[in-house]
Length: 207
Image 1 (cartoon, rainbow, N blue to C red):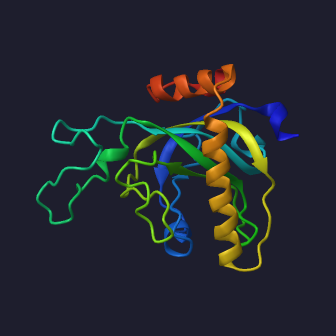
Image 2 (cartoon, one colour; image 1 turned 90 degrees about the horizontal axis):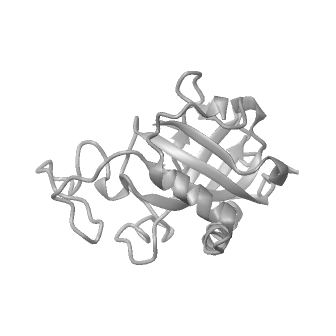
């Protein structure tokens, strides 16, 4: 069972994926680089990551600028987009609950394994219901370092008949991820603490 290998800690960079999470489903995900020398994993090797849907915590490394407002909204740098040329400042440096897909996305029949967390903002965060389906949507943060703790197993990857059923399942995963992240046992506290404090420079392969 995947639970026997958990928790798993991962450090990588956010790279461009297929773009389906945002365009097709309205539930954007961060696609992690699997390149050796960039991805570091406490399980020792990317190919050993167990497939499935998980919950955990994620943080994009970086400091929000002083012009970011206290409620987490991003500053306007004058480019007309209401954000910044370097992505969404409201996501930087904060630990978020995440619903995490590891595997081949059988509905789309991917040939390569991917790790794709969906970062879930708190209910009062200005980006919490920003997507087309009412889920969290941050602006792009490509090439940023991400620290990720895969804490618990939710369900296996499944092929769904149509995007509507897939979206419904992911929404259920988001609800369950938030619920489980609110159970403050020692593992949850330890892993959230690591995500909050990690520099993003650790070599997890030697853990």
